[in-house]
Image (cartoon, rainbow, N blue to C red; front, side):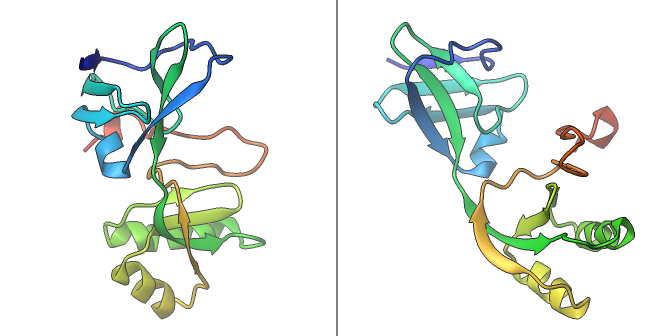
Length: 157
């Protein structure tokens, strides 16, 4: 039987066993979609806002169901000792090509696309192809500062 989900669970029982529902980034970003969890339970998602990697979206007395975003090919730029202005410049260059971008405390990520590879080669930025759960629009300035996970209502597309 199809279970309809309208939002994530705000206070899940973290002691329950986890059943994963795996989906790619583009599916997780949708508000209307269907998926099947690892145990075969089918879900229909009719959401006011998209779910995020790690969200608990359904729960029974025996288990909680969690969204697991599939890792994907990305290009990683290690920030290291780069000055903030250089990091901002890299972010601007990626954004100027209308490519998606994510910043973590120690690295920058963008999907592994030919345009990103060409950009990094042109501006002489070392990068490493890898796989990761890519969440565009996530920005972390340092290990000590909180994560900015939403750019606010002025930056919705």
